[in-house]
Length: 580
Image 1 (tube, rainbow, N blue to C red):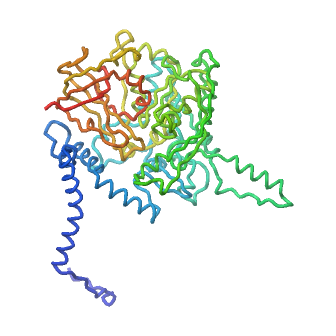
Image 2 (image 1 turned 45 degrees about the vertical axis):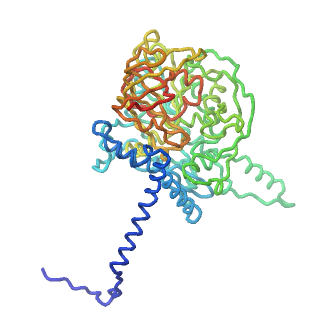
Image 3 (image 1 turned 120 degrees about the vertical axis):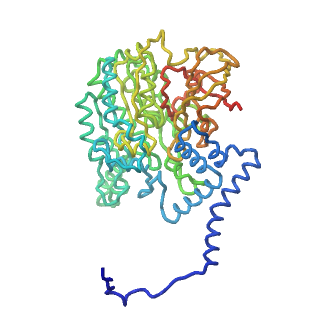
């Protein structure tokens, strides 16, 4: 083959840049020191404080064959490294500089126009493969994804399971912020609502298979504030009346979503409750039963919150860049919830916002007290009937269905209608995108036992005194840890299956239990998150139902539960320590 001639030889850059080996060695050594010294210093500090076991290096070296899949172990080590002191300091400093000088967010929070923040998985829910078109296979993807059923398949299957028990299903996918405020993401787009291109066909497919779908996107788009897009007249002697009308119309504009949060405003939440209530009254009157007219709004309060999207930016001093958003909340009185109600409300944080104080807008004087201004309270007020509410932050896809399915068969068959309120991202994201956003879709199995012989939990009077139950047990199965940096929620739990070897204190007949234990609290990973299969632990336990009755907020926390121990008694792990 003849050598090709370069026709542009005269344009070739003739400048040669060279550095000596000594300079190159200095640069390489400096770079390596930048990588090594912070990590080395952090490990030395932990060792000096007697906390070596909590270091990333100790976690990395703790793995033993047969304990846990090595890939999952390395992911947990990576998460521990992300929370290390030097990692947090460097990340927060870098993020502050990006925000201040480049108006850039991070992998979770997208900075839109005019101060609007968006959740990246919400943006992905508008594009990509979506709920119908299958994703192409790639060796780069998690091989476990091939075992995950399609979302539409699971929803249709769940509707059929309910229908077998004489229960109807109403699915309410809550629109996402970029669906309503697309012009704040891309300023050249038209200020009208949008959704994933396959969403209409997806909802139509569900309806054809027995799922009643109530899409609220158009309704919530009417609430979209357009203050920055609306022009009004300056008042003068000739147009005073017309200008006054224009100004008053502008004041009436509301927002459907909070600017710095993933969730809807109280006004949008109330509108959604009205639409659902009207739909239930017209289509499912047989599920309502007699009304009570005893549920009332009892108070009104002003509350403020910084917003979960600001928290996801992981800034050291978020108040330097953002102010809290204030809302007005109508507080609803007692009588809105009853587990014996024929109306079941399944939901996620869209249901819990304005009720769960961990999501913001809490009472500063009583930060742990439920707010009682959420979707469930307003829907109950509009229907004048109590609801059986199962709502878990970040777990609206699978865990809320499991919670209902665990109940005794005769109790489940008393239900008439399940209203499933879930963020649209959970149903519109493709399988791979959903997994990346910590959204879990799995099949659920209904408990076939009746209330007289059900083993789904420990029946006990929450008001009765409960002594500590202390056992020595071996961990045999553990649900996956959630990433505190990958979710807007501040608290998370997971389940672990234990084989009880010895009852040290109290009474327990069960040989196998399902422990509900902390993954992270206030974004800080807890020791139980590092528990490993095959190891023995001394556990101080409280019945899970008793724990939820005494601390209602904990029942709404994000709970990772992929356990196969369906019939195991559920206990909350108050304390735990490894047995050498």
